[in-house]
Image (cartoon, rainbow, N blue to C red):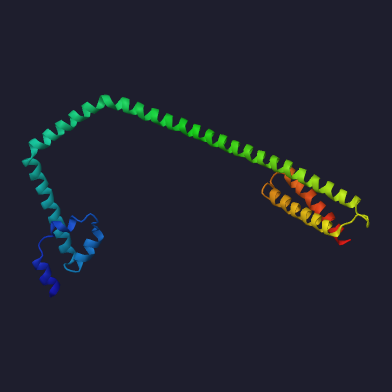
Length: 207
């Protein structure tokens, strides 16, 4: 009885139901089906459609002169814009071409930057190799000189201890300097030489 009573009272669907920007037809049908039978809902929707169409026709008839004037103005705007279409299209093509050229220049600049970075890295590696190769050669010369003067008469244990600490300190310095440029083949080879020298030096200390 409540459905019948509600269906008798409802003879139209309000326009506000269709004005929501998130309008969902399925949700509207499901909601109204709880209030009126489906045939009645179909009738209401057809009525709403007919009323809307009639109002549109009346609006066009009432504002016919405005619609015609608007159409004429739109045609005038289109005629005014037509001469601009070709230059605008040409400008668009030029912009695309410049964008492509700019992309190529940026790519070349990036490659040049990477090349400079590689050169800088190589320069730093060579500098590290030269400095540490000199230091390692100095340590070798020092140990040879120390070995030649290792007679009981000339040996000063305090001086020998200080010399050993100095050599150990310089070896740590070489390892620290070469660790940051280990990707260089020269520095890697020098690091191997330094390790071999350190092993010999350690054996000498144990004797």
